[in-house]
Image 1 (spheres, rainbow, N blue to C red):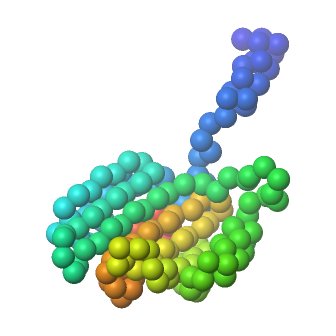
Image 2: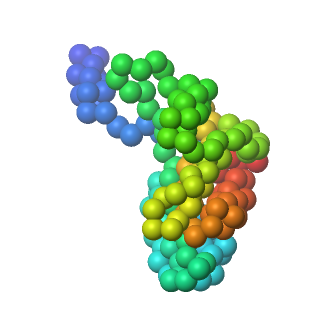
Amino acid sequence: MRLNEIAPAIAIVAMTGTVASAEGFETHDLKSLEKVVLEQFTDADYHWATPSDISVSCCGNDESLMLNVTLDRQMDEMGQETRTDEAYIAELEHSCELIGCQIEEIDAGAATARLLKIPNLGGGYKGVNVILVKDGDRLTIKSAAKTMEDAWNNAQKTLKVLKKPVLGR
């Protein structure tokens, strides 16, 4: 292939856009981690996994839970500054101030992490979101349960089993 044939091919690939490959995390396939997450929730009635998502729901009683884990990559948005981990966290903290959720820093080793507590998701559910960012990669654990304590416990169990395979430490 000659140079004058390569340039148009590169331009076509650049214009079509592709999903950015995550660079900060060790793994980019949550489907391969579905089993270790499910082992934490033995009563799971419903679950599914794709490379970028895991969903688990359980029970029809006071221990009801809904859990969603998403692995993606932060993308710059039109009109915004370059999306760094720090800029993303600052935006997250500002948004939390506006809607009234509680936000705190949590330890996640090599990643920057925040815990968001959402007191009313509707339907009697409380929510906890754990967000980890590292070099543009983002792991989000969304946990909903009837009590804040259960939502946090479920998010912690999930974080514990995903931390090493995802972060690599």
